[in-house]
Image 1: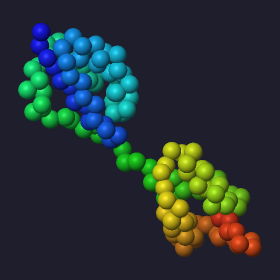
Image 2 (image 1 turned 45 degrees about the vertical axis):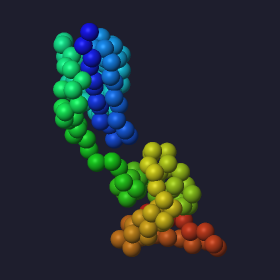
Image 3 (image 1 turned 90 degrees about the horizontal axis):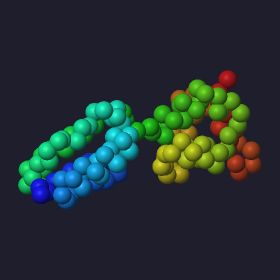
Image 4 (image 1 turned 180 degrees about the vertical axis):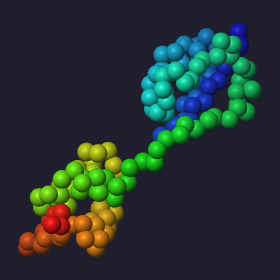
Length: 140
């Protein structure tokens, strides 16, 4: 029985499936739709070959990276929220961070504050101070 190896390069890591050709084919049949979804590919773009290649040939094969759009940035998300009306009422930094977190973004507190400062300097937001707290609102 021939051995086969499949290497799938994702942003989060690399998936390697190695073993008898029937086992590799079975794994790709089971998990292929999920992997295609992670890669952002249509369901019919990756086909399992009928005859598996030898492991040594697969090791040298290049793994094609899918074309993906750039990940969302904190600034881009804040600008989208600004257009969507999120900043129509005053928002605290905690509310803004929660909104970014809900959008699935990873960020630093310094990065969030820097982006808020930039939006304020660009004239898109007003920083309203009340005591020790600062709230950000769309500039009229």
